[in-house]
Length: 180
Image 1 (cartoon, rainbow, N blue to C red):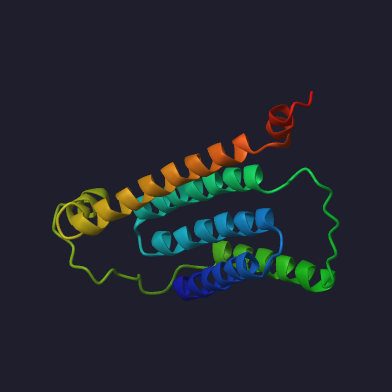
Image 2 (tube, one colour; image 1 turned 30 degrees about the horizontal axis):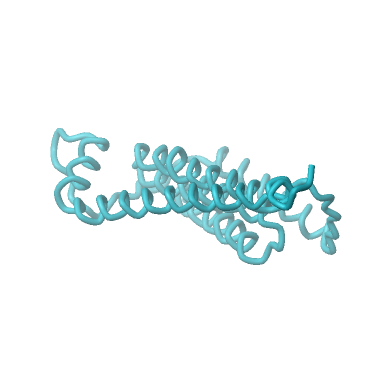
């Protein structure tokens, strides 16, 4: 019972956060919701007793979103005044209140149900972290390395884009034209 309630709650929260990412017009709101969605995704790992993967989800992926958040603050004009026009304040407050109540309910729910087991066969006397390492460096070595290369290319591209953006600042353009 507990796992089912937690699963559906995390599902609703993840879909809600990613809905904000898609439908928000403000880039910083989208990135904040993306980070929140990644944190809620880690709840699925904790439900499956994969604590290591849950912590990695929070640290690595949410940390990467925070790096994207920093790039977003550099690329978009975050100093301008933002006039928020929230049309459905009552709905937002009601959803926030309901999510708080669901969270309290999940934390207070008795654990009487059957535990959820992973489908991949566990090796006897091998812990969670060792099993992840064993799978990553045997069965999933090539996709793991490709993901690392893609992240490296994305980081280099972000640095190059910021460098180009910094060279085109209004101050540098005025200096090039002979202004003060």
